[in-house]
Amino acid sequence: MRRRNLLANLAVMAAAVASSRLPASGAEPGEAMLGEALVAGLRDAMLGLGGAPAALSPEQAPAELARALSDFHSYRYGSLAVRLPRLIRAGHALGADTEQYTTLAQTYVLAARMLVKLEEQHLGWMAAGRARRFAEAGGDVLTVAEAARNLAVLARKAGWGDRAMSIALAAADDPGLREVGRAGAAERGLLIQSAAYTAARGGDRQGMRQLTAEAGAIAAELGGTTLLRDHGGGISPATVQLHLISAENSAGDPAAAPAAARAIAPRSLPSVERRSRYDTDVAAALGQLGHRDDCIRALLTAEHHAPEETHARPAVKSLISGLLTSGRTTSELRGLAARSGVLT
Image (cartoon, rainbow, N blue to C red; front, side, top):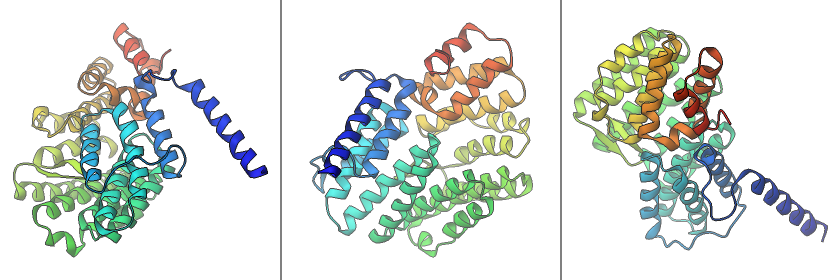
């Protein structure tokens, strides 16, 4: 009885907190709050809390996952905040076989990517760990590798640069990737790119450029863009060059980042997600160089391409906040800050 009363009280408290932060039922949360709504939904789904699992059949789950991936690559956070937690609940309810393990692993890979973007490292570790475990159970070498890439990113964010490098390069050397053709080569390239960025964050410019060149050679050999289910940006010479913008900035050479950006035609990038990343990476480099007006223009371009991403992502909000406090403000900057929930 005491346990039931405690759970009931906790449910009432949770509902009160939710109602104080989200709009009334039937209203869409503001774009600045979509990230919080998505994190809360994923947290509860991963902890087994909340509503009953959706009635998805084993045949329906992969199609629903494809829709969630489309939401991610088009930055439809509002839709994803509903669809992705529902997929996690349904995936756990469908039972255990190889195909369902693979779908659930791919769902958790997507969840981990979103949680990394939203700087929710604790939940990110949980999602990435589950992704790898279910991918291994399903024998899906590509998803095992993509889960490892997410773990490497999380290790880097935790300050464990050597561990992040080891995770990424060990996964890239998995012989299984060489047995699955172009997709395996593309995944190897992404893992090596991740290692390059880890080198950049450690201030190793030479190592970063060597690893980026290695990833670029893989992309050039593949030719065109090789798309991957779990990473819709895939890999191409343009995406490797995109990665170099942020890597140069992180390695301590922001002046090299705009030069890297000029080598890319943004329209050549394979998704809205990648094109928005281009704009925000350029904005971050311009901000580091003190080019405020150009930085704001790049952020406004990112907002035009992907408003929900620009308004919800913590890294972008931090950049906007820094602009507000470091110099003169304009109506454009104040408007962007208001839409992002930075200025109320």
